Length: 101
Image 1: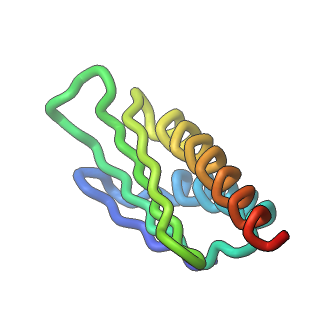
Image 2 (image 1 turned 90 degrees about the vertical axis):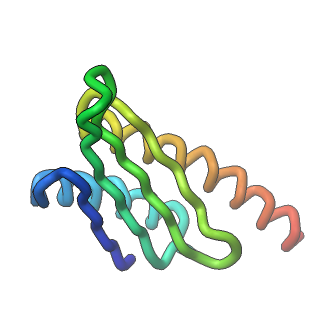
Image 3 (image 1 turned 135 degrees about the horizontal axis):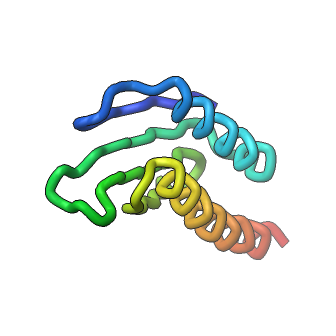
């Protein structure tokens, strides 16, 4: 899977990229139709409570899938976003099975 990172008000971090790659590789093993991920990491200076934003857009056959989360840390935000994507992809996969039967 090709992964493209975009940072806003945050410097690039290999630690965050490794965490994201690990999580996305797990998704790709479960959903092999995924071909690309666009990852958006943004630090919002206006909100002091939940100022770490992570958004991930996945490309594959059919419409693109997008999920995002705002949390206190990027690690929490990435985890929540991946969990949301799992739910969305599971629904999509069940629809694909229904059409192929």
